[in-house]
Amino acid sequence: MMFSATISQNIQKLGKKYLHNPVSVTVSQRRDVVTLIKHRAFKVDKKRKTELLAHLLKKYKTKQVLVFVNMKEDIDTVTSYLVKNNINAVSLHGDIDFKIRTNNIKQFRAGKVQVLVATDIAGRGIDIKNLPLVINYELPEATDEFTHRVGRTGRANNKGEVISLLTVSDYNRFTKIER
Image (cartoon, rainbow, N blue to C red; front, side, top):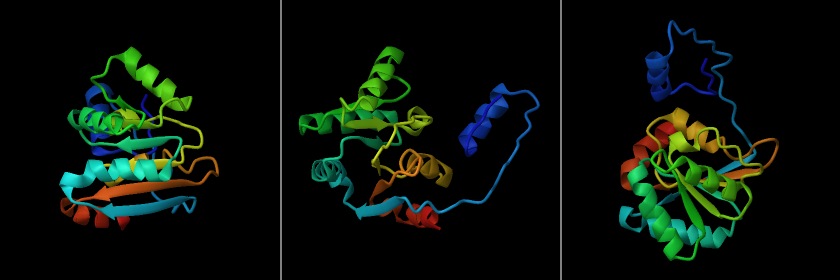
């Protein structure tokens, strides 16, 4: 059995690969607007994106921030930059050893690490109580993935905030996501 709040194309492919004669049950297609989550977007030159991320993390001084990056190859670069700029950050992606992944999540949940930089796959299912801030360092390819990312904050009647960092190549996709 496989359960998901939303079924993206990647999840559908995974289901077809491993499930035999799957049946899909849809509870609702309606998307509610969550008023507890404040959305912001910053336009930035691609070369200065990591610098802006570090600036925002220092400015907001938020105890816990989940930063989403699209490709695991970019996570180490982003995490290293943050650490070099005195921001307590760890990585989370599929190629990290299971024990290290588990430890990174545990440290983040306990508030011992301020920033968790993750891919969508690794970030799926992470439940952090009262997570105040999610940052889309890169926009996801699909609106469903954006919904999953945003859904990490603003849970259980708690307020949350989402920041998306946009380069020129993101404008059309962001407009689609906003719709």
